[in-house]
Image (cartoon, rainbow, N blue to C red; front, side, top):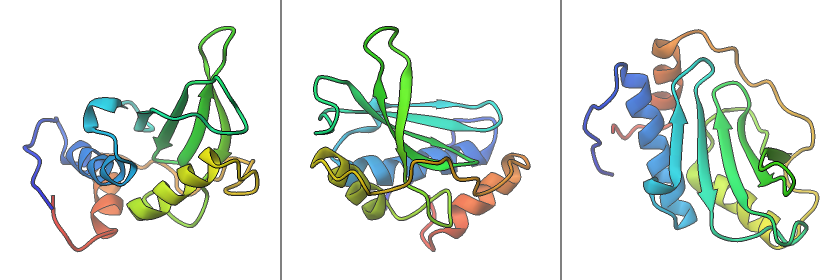
Length: 143
């Protein structure tokens, strides 16, 4: 594990970037593929290189937010808007990176039952300090 320098007004954003580093590493993409929106709820976008078999020709992405966790999305051809096709679900907004990677791999291979269609509500955003706690509790390693 590597340490990311503190770059953000609140340490929770460093925790978000640290978690994204783990997930993008598991996916084989770099942090340059990511953006983070610091508003509440905090959200992240990860551009993916490969299509989902069920959606040929569509650009794909992995999106995360502090309320619903991870979701797979495609870019709508007509207006470029993201359309969520599946939510990872589970019991946490920050599952292990290998679980997120398996979710995306299954969708790339055409699995149409992985994840869930309905958006989960895993937590209520209660501020940056609480988000940092959630993200840092998921692992004993520190960023």
